[in-house]
Image (tube, rainbow, N blue to C red; front, side):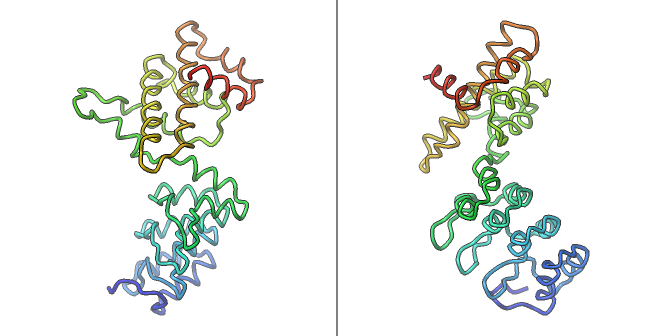
Length: 267
Protein backbone atom coordinates (compact mmCIF):
# COMPACT_ATOMS: atom_id res chain seq x y z
CA UNK A 1 0.00 0.00 0.00
CA UNK A 2 1.30 3.46 -0.95
CA UNK A 3 2.64 5.76 1.81
CA UNK A 4 -0.01 8.13 3.16
CA UNK A 5 -0.28 11.52 1.47
CA UNK A 6 -2.16 14.45 2.91
CA UNK A 7 -5.81 14.50 1.90
CA UNK A 8 -5.71 11.30 -0.16
CA UNK A 9 -8.22 9.13 1.69
CA UNK A 10 -10.03 6.07 0.46
CA UNK A 11 -13.80 5.90 1.10
CA UNK A 12 -13.10 3.43 3.91
CA UNK A 13 -10.56 5.80 5.49
CA UNK A 14 -13.05 8.66 5.36
CA UNK A 15 -15.55 6.36 7.04
CA UNK A 16 -12.95 5.52 9.72
CA UNK A 17 -12.57 9.20 10.65
CA UNK A 18 -16.36 9.51 10.92
CA UNK A 19 -16.51 6.39 13.08
CA UNK A 20 -13.77 7.79 15.35
CA UNK A 21 -15.82 10.96 15.84
CA UNK A 22 -18.77 8.81 16.93
CA UNK A 23 -16.55 6.69 19.19
CA UNK A 24 -17.64 3.33 17.76
CA UNK A 25 -14.59 1.15 18.46
CA UNK A 26 -16.23 -2.04 17.17
CA UNK A 27 -16.86 -0.49 13.75
CA UNK A 28 -13.39 1.08 13.77
CA UNK A 29 -11.87 -2.35 14.42
CA UNK A 30 -13.75 -3.77 11.46
CA UNK A 31 -12.49 -1.00 9.18
CA UNK A 32 -8.91 -1.26 10.42
CA UNK A 33 -8.95 -4.95 9.63
CA UNK A 34 -9.69 -4.27 5.97
CA UNK A 35 -7.07 -3.85 3.26
CA UNK A 36 -8.42 -0.47 2.18
CA UNK A 37 -7.59 1.37 5.42
CA UNK A 38 -4.16 2.67 6.42
CA UNK A 39 -3.92 3.28 10.15
CA UNK A 40 -1.66 6.30 9.51
CA UNK A 41 -3.70 7.85 6.69
CA UNK A 42 -3.76 11.66 6.59
CA UNK A 43 -6.73 13.99 6.19
CA UNK A 44 -6.44 17.32 4.34
CA UNK A 45 -4.79 18.90 7.41
CA UNK A 46 -2.30 16.08 7.92
CA UNK A 47 -4.14 14.62 10.92
CA UNK A 48 -3.96 10.88 11.45
CA UNK A 49 -6.81 8.80 12.93
CA UNK A 50 -4.82 8.71 16.20
CA UNK A 51 -4.64 12.51 16.28
CA UNK A 52 -8.40 12.70 15.73
CA UNK A 53 -9.07 10.17 18.51
CA UNK A 54 -6.68 11.93 20.92
CA UNK A 55 -8.18 15.36 20.26
CA UNK A 56 -11.70 14.01 20.76
CA UNK A 57 -10.58 12.29 24.00
CA UNK A 58 -11.58 8.81 22.79
CA UNK A 59 -9.35 6.65 24.98
CA UNK A 60 -10.61 3.25 23.78
CA UNK A 61 -10.22 4.38 20.19
CA UNK A 62 -6.64 5.50 20.83
CA UNK A 63 -5.87 2.15 22.41
CA UNK A 64 -7.32 0.34 19.38
CA UNK A 65 -5.38 2.45 16.88
CA UNK A 66 -2.12 1.88 18.76
CA UNK A 67 -2.76 -1.87 18.64
CA UNK A 68 -3.02 -1.59 14.87
CA UNK A 69 0.32 0.22 14.67
CA UNK A 70 -0.61 3.90 14.73
CA UNK A 71 2.48 6.16 14.60
CA UNK A 72 2.44 8.11 17.86
CA UNK A 73 5.12 10.50 16.58
CA UNK A 74 3.74 11.27 13.13
CA UNK A 75 4.61 14.90 12.31
CA UNK A 76 2.77 15.39 9.01
CA UNK A 77 0.23 17.80 10.50
CA UNK A 78 0.17 21.15 8.67
CA UNK A 79 1.18 22.97 11.86
CA UNK A 80 3.45 20.25 13.22
CA UNK A 81 1.08 19.01 15.91
CA UNK A 82 1.58 15.48 17.27
CA UNK A 83 -0.81 13.03 18.87
CA UNK A 84 0.63 13.96 22.29
CA UNK A 85 -0.12 17.62 21.64
CA UNK A 86 -3.72 16.78 20.75
CA UNK A 87 -3.97 14.61 23.89
CA UNK A 88 -2.79 17.54 25.99
CA UNK A 89 -5.21 19.93 24.29
CA UNK A 90 -8.09 17.52 24.95
CA UNK A 91 -7.33 17.48 28.68
CA UNK A 92 -7.43 13.68 28.84
CA UNK A 93 -4.93 12.47 31.43
CA UNK A 94 -5.49 8.85 30.39
CA UNK A 95 -4.72 9.49 26.72
CA UNK A 96 -1.76 11.72 27.55
CA UNK A 97 -0.27 8.92 29.63
CA UNK A 98 -1.12 6.40 26.87
CA UNK A 99 0.72 8.43 24.24
CA UNK A 100 3.77 8.72 26.48
CA UNK A 101 3.86 5.00 27.19
CA UNK A 102 3.60 4.38 23.45
CA UNK A 103 6.81 6.34 22.92
CA UNK A 104 5.59 9.87 22.23
CA UNK A 105 8.44 12.39 22.09
CA UNK A 106 7.95 15.10 24.70
CA UNK A 107 10.40 17.55 23.16
CA UNK A 108 8.87 17.66 19.65
CA UNK A 109 7.75 21.19 18.75
CA UNK A 110 5.03 22.49 16.43
CA UNK A 111 5.27 25.27 13.84
CA UNK A 112 5.35 27.96 16.55
CA UNK A 113 8.02 26.17 18.58
CA UNK A 114 5.79 24.85 21.36
CA UNK A 115 6.03 21.39 22.93
CA UNK A 116 3.06 19.27 23.98
CA UNK A 117 3.43 20.43 27.59
CA UNK A 118 3.48 24.07 26.51
CA UNK A 119 0.40 23.58 24.33
CA UNK A 120 -1.48 21.95 27.19
CA UNK A 121 -0.45 24.76 29.54
CA UNK A 122 -1.58 27.37 27.00
CA UNK A 123 -5.16 26.03 27.15
CA UNK A 124 -5.14 25.45 30.91
CA UNK A 125 -4.84 21.64 30.92
CA UNK A 126 -2.40 21.64 33.83
CA UNK A 127 -3.00 18.01 34.82
CA UNK A 128 -1.75 16.94 31.40
CA UNK A 129 1.23 19.28 31.75
CA UNK A 130 2.12 17.60 35.05
CA UNK A 131 1.89 14.13 33.51
CA UNK A 132 4.13 15.07 30.58
CA UNK A 133 6.71 16.84 32.73
CA UNK A 134 6.84 13.97 35.22
CA UNK A 135 7.07 11.19 32.66
CA UNK A 136 10.19 9.07 32.79
CA UNK A 137 10.39 6.17 30.27
CA UNK A 138 10.76 2.76 31.90
CA UNK A 139 13.54 1.82 29.49
CA UNK A 140 15.71 4.64 30.88
CA UNK A 141 15.45 3.04 34.30
CA UNK A 142 15.90 -0.49 32.94
CA UNK A 143 19.33 0.63 31.72
CA UNK A 144 20.53 0.40 35.33
CA UNK A 145 19.24 -3.18 35.70
CA UNK A 146 22.03 -4.43 33.43
CA UNK A 147 25.77 -4.43 34.22
CA UNK A 148 27.51 -1.52 32.49
CA UNK A 149 31.18 -1.23 31.55
CA UNK A 150 33.38 -3.06 34.04
CA UNK A 151 30.53 -3.60 36.50
CA UNK A 152 29.89 -7.25 37.36
CA UNK A 153 26.50 -6.51 38.92
CA UNK A 154 23.74 -4.11 37.84
CA UNK A 155 23.30 -0.99 39.91
CA UNK A 156 19.58 -1.73 40.28
CA UNK A 157 18.09 -5.22 40.78
CA UNK A 158 15.36 -5.98 38.24
CA UNK A 159 12.81 -6.55 41.01
CA UNK A 160 13.23 -2.95 42.20
CA UNK A 161 12.78 -1.32 38.79
CA UNK A 162 8.97 -1.49 38.78
CA UNK A 163 8.43 -0.08 42.29
CA UNK A 164 11.04 2.64 41.75
CA UNK A 165 9.53 3.62 38.40
CA UNK A 166 6.14 4.03 40.05
CA UNK A 167 7.67 6.50 42.51
CA UNK A 168 9.65 8.37 39.85
CA UNK A 169 6.55 8.96 37.73
CA UNK A 170 4.24 10.00 40.56
CA UNK A 171 2.81 13.49 40.19
CA UNK A 172 2.22 13.92 43.93
CA UNK A 173 5.51 15.11 45.37
CA UNK A 174 4.47 15.52 48.97
CA UNK A 175 7.10 13.69 51.07
CA UNK A 176 4.41 11.72 52.91
CA UNK A 177 3.11 10.34 49.60
CA UNK A 178 6.59 9.28 48.54
CA UNK A 179 7.32 7.60 51.87
CA UNK A 180 3.95 5.83 51.69
CA UNK A 181 4.85 4.50 48.23
CA UNK A 182 8.09 3.17 49.71
CA UNK A 183 6.33 1.66 52.71
CA UNK A 184 3.60 -0.09 50.71
CA UNK A 185 6.15 -2.16 48.78
CA UNK A 186 8.05 -4.68 50.92
CA UNK A 187 10.80 -4.87 48.28
CA UNK A 188 11.63 -1.21 48.78
CA UNK A 189 11.17 -0.75 52.51
CA UNK A 190 14.57 -2.19 53.37
CA UNK A 191 17.85 -0.34 53.89
CA UNK A 192 19.80 -2.21 51.19
CA UNK A 193 17.08 -1.76 48.57
CA UNK A 194 16.70 1.93 49.35
CA UNK A 195 20.46 2.42 49.13
CA UNK A 196 20.48 1.00 45.59
CA UNK A 197 17.52 3.15 44.56
CA UNK A 198 19.08 6.22 46.18
CA UNK A 199 22.29 5.77 44.19
CA UNK A 200 20.41 5.26 40.92
CA UNK A 201 18.37 8.42 41.50
CA UNK A 202 21.60 10.34 42.00
CA UNK A 203 23.02 8.90 38.78
CA UNK A 204 19.91 9.92 36.85
CA UNK A 205 20.13 13.40 38.36
CA UNK A 206 23.76 13.70 37.32
CA UNK A 207 22.97 12.48 33.80
CA UNK A 208 20.14 15.01 33.44
CA UNK A 209 22.52 17.82 34.33
CA UNK A 210 25.33 16.70 32.03
CA UNK A 211 23.34 15.89 28.88
CA UNK A 212 23.39 18.35 25.97
CA UNK A 213 19.74 19.35 26.46
CA UNK A 214 19.93 19.80 30.22
CA UNK A 215 16.74 18.76 32.02
CA UNK A 216 16.91 20.83 35.21
CA UNK A 217 13.35 20.02 36.28
CA UNK A 218 13.87 16.27 36.15
CA UNK A 219 17.29 16.61 37.80
CA UNK A 220 15.80 18.53 40.72
CA UNK A 221 13.00 15.97 41.06
CA UNK A 222 15.49 13.06 41.12
CA UNK A 223 17.62 14.84 43.72
CA UNK A 224 14.55 15.66 45.82
CA UNK A 225 13.45 12.01 45.80
CA UNK A 226 16.93 10.74 46.55
CA UNK A 227 17.00 13.03 49.61
CA UNK A 228 13.73 11.56 50.85
CA UNK A 229 15.11 8.06 50.28
CA UNK A 230 18.18 9.03 52.29
CA UNK A 231 15.98 10.17 55.18
CA UNK A 232 14.14 6.83 55.02
CA UNK A 233 17.44 4.95 55.05
CA UNK A 234 18.67 6.84 58.11
CA UNK A 235 15.35 6.30 59.83
CA UNK A 236 15.28 2.54 59.15
CA UNK A 237 18.82 2.18 60.47
CA UNK A 238 17.76 3.67 63.81
CA UNK A 239 14.23 2.32 64.25
CA UNK A 240 12.19 -0.81 63.63
CA UNK A 241 8.70 0.59 63.07
CA UNK A 242 8.77 0.38 59.26
CA UNK A 243 8.55 4.10 58.59
CA UNK A 244 5.36 4.75 60.54
CA UNK A 245 6.89 7.44 62.72
CA UNK A 246 8.51 9.30 59.84
CA UNK A 247 5.13 9.40 58.08
CA UNK A 248 3.50 10.85 61.18
CA UNK A 249 6.24 13.41 61.58
CA UNK A 250 5.91 14.52 57.96
CA UNK A 251 2.11 14.57 57.84
CA UNK A 252 1.95 18.18 58.97
CA UNK A 253 4.94 19.38 56.98
CA UNK A 254 4.37 21.12 53.64
CA UNK A 255 6.21 19.77 50.62
CA UNK A 256 7.92 23.10 49.95
CA UNK A 257 9.24 23.50 53.49
CA UNK A 258 10.37 19.90 53.70
CA UNK A 259 11.86 19.99 50.22
CA UNK A 260 13.85 23.09 51.05
CA UNK A 261 15.11 21.55 54.28
CA UNK A 262 16.30 18.30 52.77
CA UNK A 263 17.81 19.97 49.73
CA UNK A 264 19.75 22.43 51.86
CA UNK A 265 20.92 19.67 54.15
CA UNK A 266 22.50 17.90 51.19
CA UNK A 267 24.29 20.85 49.63
